[in-house]
Image 1 (cartoon, protein in one colour):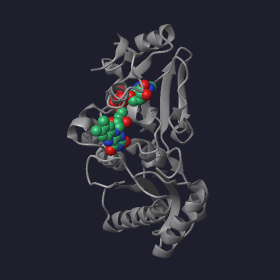
Image 2 (cartoon, protein in one colour):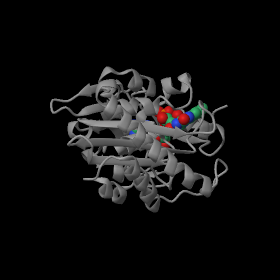
Image 3 (cartoon, rainbow, N blue to C red):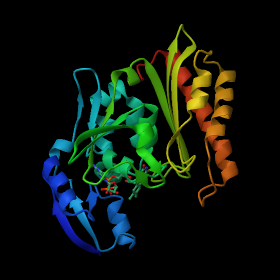
Length: 295
Ligand SMILES: Cc1cc2nc3c(=O)[nH]c(=O)nc-3n(C[C@H](O)[C@H](O)[C@H](O)COP(=O)(O)OP(=O)(O)OC[C@H]3O[C@@H](n4cnc5c(N)ncnc54)[C@H](O)[C@@H]3O)c2cc1C
């Protein structure tokens, strides 16, 4: 069964931070959909855990006075997808997390756990980078905010300090207002599968068809979820045309470093990354032309 040395339960953020300080070797467990698998396969066998699952102050989605969308770190994928505020302001994030696993998984998996495990296939991690989100952490030293783009330090490594826990993901009004987006996950099956590669894009237009701003993040295109800042800069001020989308998709490859894995070869991923970026942008253009409400 599960080889767990000890489990400590926190009911509030303060208790969680205190437990982090008292048990520096212990791992946080939220929904447990990554942690329990690792305990079961032996890689985390015999560990100590700090459960934050009963910290209700980490759950829920709200709109702050300045229009910032705040998603508590323990909010499940199901609750994110079904939330009215997410559907209205950041629907691409809801769509992205709805591609993860199956319904049972989405009921238990949390956004905090998904971004904290630090893998490049995490569906929410790519998507929040395309929303230029901010990750809020709380620890002994108080509250700290890190941009999603700076949170991943390497494969499986994220910027969470000693006594900290991730408390929320925040998306500012200026990061979603006027944008339309698309999440493209390519996996070997249509359900219950991790991304072979993925692309999340958000675009804002001006004067009809000129790119005012664009943010594109890729999953499984390198050791962490990656933004393509140079290609984004190149596109700003240009027409949101088919030719330019293709040129963007080509330029973006220069900033990505996909590798061989049992899921796909490097060569296949390069072709895939081009294609999913182009198709994502095309789909965004259709949303603008169709006048859909989707951001
Ligand atoms: C069958 C199956 C299918 C899956 N399919 C997908 C998929 O398609 N797409 C996808 O992206 N993922 C998928 N996953 C992975 C997993 O479900 C997600 O990564 C999930 O979101 C993790 O959330 P959790 O609350 O269960 O995390 P946990 O397992 O509790 O924790 C994960 C990691 O994050 C840390 N952590 C958790 N919460 C916090 C916090 N608040 N602050 C700091 N650290 C924290 C833990 O210490 C641990 O290192 C799948 C998993 C399974 C078992």
